[in-house]
Structure formats: C-alpha cells, structure tokens
Length: 415
Image (cartoon, rainbow, N blue to C red):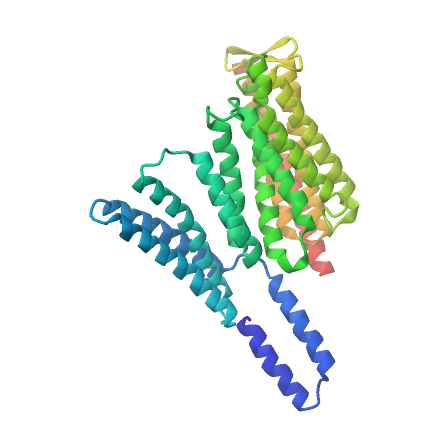
C-alpha cells in the first residue's frame, strides 16, 4: 500500500473516532483513493529512475562477467546468476507482500529479474557452446516473462514482453533457415503495423485494475503505428521484390501479423476511444483504410497486384521512375498519416487531454515537412517549390499553433 493511502487510512480512522464520518463513507473514500492511486500513470520520476537503474545494473552485470570470463568458473557464473535472479524477484515480492510504500522500487527489481533471465540464456549458451539462435532465444524469453507480467501486473515487464515479441517476429523473419523468412522491407514494416494494431485493440479488453499495463500497450501500439505509417509513405522508394512462388510464401508472416492486427481491431471495435465515442467510427474507418493500404503494399511487393506503368519524377536534375501502384500506396499512406494527426487533435480536445492535441499538431507538421522534402523536383521546380512551400509551411504553422492554443484554452476553461 502506498504511503499516501496509509496516511489517508489513519486520517479516516481518526475522523470515524470523532464522529465526522461513518464507516461506509470512510470505506468509499478509501476505495476512491486506491483507484486514483492506480490510475496515476505508469511512469513517475522515481519509477523512471528505478527502471533506468535496473537497466544499467543488468548491463553492468553482463560487462563484469564478460571482463572476467576466463577467471570465473562455470558453476560460479551460473550460481551467481541464479542468486541475482532469485534475489531480485524475492526482494520485489517481499516489498509487495509486506505492504512497504515502495511499489515502483519493487517493479524495478522485477524488471531486473526479467532482464537477468535473458542474460542467463546467453550465459548458458556461451558456457556450453550452444549454437546461436536468436529467434529461439527471444521466444524462450517471451514465454518466461509473459506470465510474470500477468501475475505481477507489472507495466515494466509488460513492456519487456512487447519488446520480446517484436524482436522475436523480426528475428524469425530475418533467419534464412526459418520457414517464415522474409526479405523485403515492406514485409518487415507490416510486422510492426500488425503488432501495433493488435496492441491498441487488445488493451481495450483489459480491466481498470490493470490500467497501467493498458497504457503501456497503447503507447507501444501507437509508436509502432506511427513508425509504420510514416515509413509506408516512402513505399514507392522501396526495393520491390519479384513475382514468384517464393515471394508469395514470404508474405505469410507479415500477412499473419496484419490478421492479428485485424483481430485486435475486432476485439476493441466497440471500446476504442472511450473518452470520445463520437470519434470512434472515424477511428475505425482510419484503421480499416490503414489495413487495406498495408495489404495492398504487401501484394504489390509480392507481385500479386500489377504495378502499372512507370512514371518519371525529376529530382535535382536527375530522373527517377516509379511504378504507378507504388505511388498510389505511398499517397494513401500520406492521407492516412494526416487524417490520424487531425484525429488526434480532435480526440485530445474532446477528451481534455492536451498532450494528444500537441502530438497531433506535431504529427501534422512533420507530415508536411516530410512530404515537402520528399516531393521536391528539378532545380527550377525545386526553387519554386521552396518559395511556395515556405509560404505554405509558415501559414500552416501559424494556423495549427493558433488552433492548438484555442483548443487547449477551451479545455482549461471547461476543466
């Protein structure tokens, strides 16, 4: 129990003793305080420093063992690892079970334990000269720490689970010996997009008692979607594979990731954006368009969809040609990016969360700057574009900043 809750409990007992509150009211106040304490967020200064210290400690242990590798006996390495692993989780559980007011420190200790398990896998493989298999290592790590995230309800370990799953997908795709091996960058990009969609959809199915894990899942999903949509805007510049049976087989993993993302959308279909139900249909439509764009990119990359004629674009005096299909997919990704940015602004305004307003404005500005640089033409065309583009950028910056300040001001007035 947190220190604030202990002080509140003493204060409520004193209020009951003086007849200021009855027991039922005191219980409701204590329950409300406990709920607010859980909903404060998953990051704080102490929590951030604790996680950073845990990560540094894990790295330090690895470096110390590496520096003295030949001088440390094998059994000493393994025993030391088990001692650190058990000690970290044991101390964290002791803090939680005894009700000590250090919940973030306990999470940092569990974070150390989860990280040391991965270090232990590498240690055992090195001692016994096991063949290196990164995808198998990530899968074992994922299977080992996923139950901890559930049992301990730890957002830090939940973040590690997401990282382990993301790494496993990419190592699986990169391993030429894997049946799910892929080669094109577009296919790798779909892994992040599919996983991001799944995280955003599935987190809506979790209860309020694990809200901090919900925030981790939603934050990770948003980062993956931002990365995926932004990079998809350059699809016409990707190296497109050749149409063959092998290229069709290689889209199995990214197609599966997109299907997982669709399943996540279905799960969260009626629970997305709970603070602004009016925007939910718009978000659904955006996600459907995104999935369709990603599927088209995969099929074009595999040669299933025709790429169409070649079109020429001037770039600083040189001529570059692109397939029509790749240009259409890129343009669709641009539209999705800008619509997502505007949706974030509207969502932040309706839900009174100015961080989303600021994020949407920044995303919109980044999209304009990126497309401005991406679409420059020959020397004369570029000079004209720079003059006109500069005017457009200045006007857009002024308008977006004015809109952002107006929305934030309205949010403060309502609050």
